[in-house]
Image (cartoon, rainbow, N blue to C red; front, top):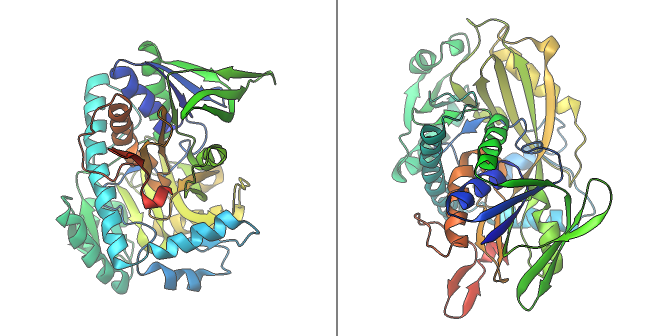
Length: 428
């Protein structure tokens, strides 16, 4: 079967890889001339299975009120005359109940564990290199109050199979010596989590997929044409400005934040909204001061990863529609916090700033699975966990497209029943 995958970010490329391994003929359609040039380009770098608490949780509404009007706030809501933004915000608040948070954590951890194992298998199989480190992830705290909240979160994660443990300040410094001069009061530690460069991985896997026969075509997806309950083709704008229609047996949408724009004319509403994130990349200036373990600063919503001789710091979230302008104030705030914690570790004069749109659902749980159209599938809406969930999502959607039941117990979109296809509430 010929499958056309729309979007060559880390999700689209991983999907193409596993579809090809399942025996399908695969074409990747990407508006850029190479893979991994948007959301996957400069993210935080963490494979963070055990630190997957959704943004929507019972403590967030109060924090959001405190952050209103602060340009440097970890979560910045910029009100717009945009119905989709307000509907998404209301749905986000509904996900902040204890029951919904517990359900969402279970989904995210289940997919994360499956995905991390898949990444490790793929790495062993192919030898792919992407500056990966298997040294765990340390979640550190400089506030006793925030550390207290982490105890409950850790308990929940452990119930779902994560090897997460609470550690004191001394143990934090033993795990990562760069924290020795940081006023840390404690943390949570997951030795099995990993880190790596998602951009390098995406481009490396795209090259490996090409050797398997996966074709990368350049073009901007304009619309999907439907006939009789099936997709008949996709209208594409080529690099030369001309339009053409591409045909396949099945179509997989992996367009991140742009997926709902493509689905809306087909009568499929996706609760995906762009959540703009920022990152700073610094060359290592002093190896003795630079961290090597991937870490998370929970109070500032920042993640730190070591990518070879680079330090990657990423985080914060901004709801501002499809605006892709880089806000230097927010980048400078990330840089300032980094220099406060790890003075001299990186060279701030050579800092590289970046911003990208994360495709966020209110629950953080992505859309993976079938739709009401018999040959149209989704793999989108992974929010801040696209890199973490890429291999698991790609492997699962390859099973679904192939007519097989995925190996994991996850709330897949479009579960087939005797009555046809049932779209879950968050996909309605």
